[in-house]
Image 1 (cartoon, helix red, strand yellow):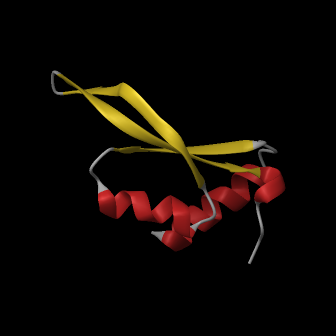
Image 2: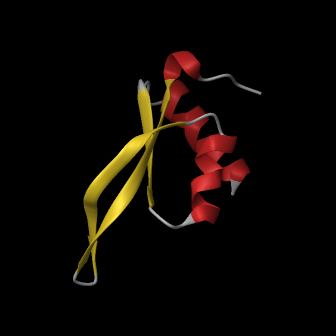
Image 3: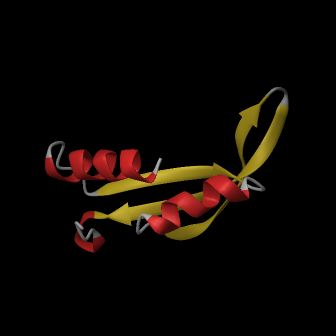
Length: 73
């Protein structure tokens, strides 16, 4: 999955010319929360009850990567 995310980041910054890419991870999903950090994303905080799924609201962790902080391997 890291390889796929690297390609998505590269495409976003270099082809779509976006300035910011975000990743939202449901609180408690520790496996998924590791991936953004490995790819250079910074955790910005918790969005309280941001996600609604199957009749319940869930807190979500917000991660972001700015173009100026992107370092291509």
